[in-house]
Length: 102
Image: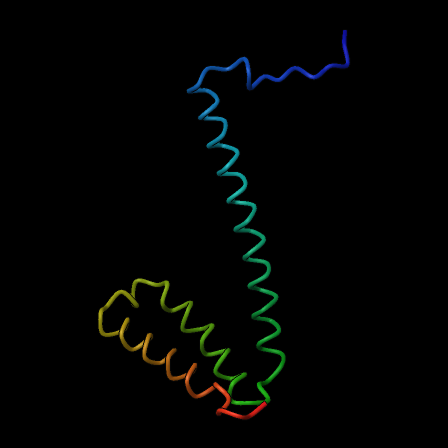
């Protein structure tokens, strides 16, 4: 018996290596999704617990909700796409500080 590790990937054919790599990538993506879902839950809990103290902060919460809506089938309608884009632009424009203000 030896302590030297055997690299099994080197002994596999191209198709097997490709299948294994795909499985590894799928597992990595699933792990990332779980981590993102947990971060989203934390963010949403924080947003609910702390009321906005300014219009820009309220607009940021609205941007977040609009982004969620934009990912749904309801947002595929061309009119809604335009409305979402226009609303986000309004938030960006109205939240920007006037020239010269620090």
